[in-house]
Length: 430
Ligand code: DOR
Ligand code: ZN
Image (tube, rainbow, N blue to C red):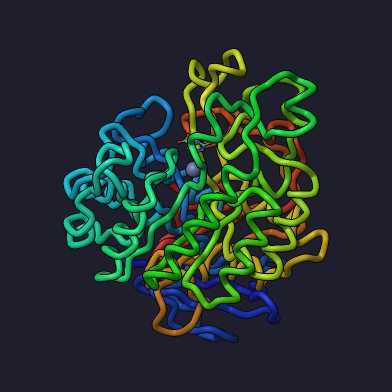
């Protein structure tokens, strides 16, 4: 089945209104389209067209915790958030540390057909940090894994980290590090600082993140490999990244929407929806992260979408799992924290949420502006709309959004995956 779509009068980031004709999965014409025969027309007056968003950090929970999220439900949340591709983290059960498991996730994604699901492979067997996983077998599998991460856990052993960095060079892979020195975060419940002292909760100090980032950028520079730092959360980390980049080392980094908006002050109500790893930090950290994203010291926004079932999340603070939903609200939070204050324009959003993450992940079909012959992976957004976040209306199987009841800017109106709509009029097509 093929179809033809004409997007009428959408504004390209940094440009004026244009028509986009899509046929057989690719954009065939951009400009003023005169002949719209056979096309379904979408009136995109006032809408912005972005290259489909790409998430480098999504937890889909399948296999193992299909009660919290499945590949299909997470894919639907992603499409509704404007995404056309997501990278699925390896901390599933079983862990995605073999060709078999990454191929299973890849197939589930293909069958759901709502976004491209690119599996991330574990760095170490069982995420235990003791022995390298079958990196080569995952890279050459049908899933073509390029990003490897023990996310949820830090690859703490520097020798293992060095070997992983060296190993993935053979296929232009990248190691995505969850930077947390485990000896400095034993029993940690929130950011270590004045608020943790006041609440009497064990702190997670900024230095636990910064020490690992400093070590790993040095390692990446030493062996000339690609390193990606997950969910950067402190001002000190930004300074280390700035220095590493000034050396020309091949280091990239991401920040989450929640670390761009929320601070440790939210923890004072002891609502576990605000428990996340790394923890919410100070207002000064938030300001530094926004500035770093604006300057490109932090390359991309990644959601760290982390669905958790009610029994794992709505319990006493100390027992609640860390993590929060992100896919369906990411673009709105980025508009609120970066576009509205004038730190980024829409072209900058397209870079940080689509073009650059697509490049880091090696997803060659994604991250392209509409142009003849290019796969039509696109998102239409209404920049003037407002949405009130209602957890019960989200597509995720879980409900742990920290933005419940918040009024956020912008709305995804339509998403196209290879020329077919996955979202139309703000609603999932399937
Ligand atoms: O808050 C988090 N949740 N941080 C992580 O690193 C893992 C994630 C999860 O899997 O729930
Ligand atoms: Zn993590």
